Image 1 (tube, rainbow, N blue to C red):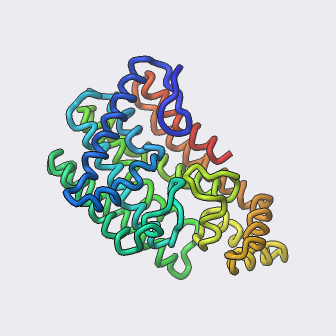
Image 2: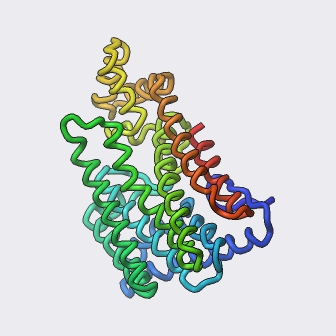
Length: 336
């Protein structure tokens, strides 16, 4: 048994492990190549988050999905580069919108160079992703453009908030389907499609990726409250401090609105107040960690991960299917 990729994913077959490791190494080289510019400063800014590392969650899914066809097909690695470049570009933009100071344990690009450079660097990465995508054919361009539209739509919906009468939790889950699920689904779809897998396999893996992506983000929501050291390099409670409405907070608000318990109403007021004060922030974290809303968010994470696992049922048994199933376990484990 060997360990590859994020969360210590174990692979129980030497041939699969070799394929995945070789593929991920090629993706890493492709990322460095795609982020080079004739202007040295642009190269430095574009490679800032590439060199900071990261889980490479999406490229790993491309490699595993490709096992259901020809994993050595020429489009597999470039498609993994495309999805990771797209993901990286969104991080530059997200950090500007969220006014984040740290990303992956290093200064965020907006902290280091300012908002304008960070936004333009994200645009540069989108352009490089499109350049690589163009060589993969019109169908790949269409798939990626549709996913990108969903991603942006999810971001807009998050910023705008739920419409009157809409359940904020349902709204938030729709947001995550666009913001996170869409690109994770494309990762699985590209891996299967570029490898020449059957259409039914491509569809199955796409649906798996959609649900796994939502579970992955929900696990991040739980970690932001529950962990002592956030895997993304952010300190615990970063989203909470920045007023980003993650699932535990939404469940807390729903409980306060439904039952009106004084302690819930008081905690909502604390969470919605000024958490730039370290003592207030620490108190909000302490009380949220003990609140049933956090456990409810964990249950939602498990539900989406189990839905993802169930989608794998039609696939032929083998080490690749087992590794994809273990990804579901890994996501749930992250959420405790």
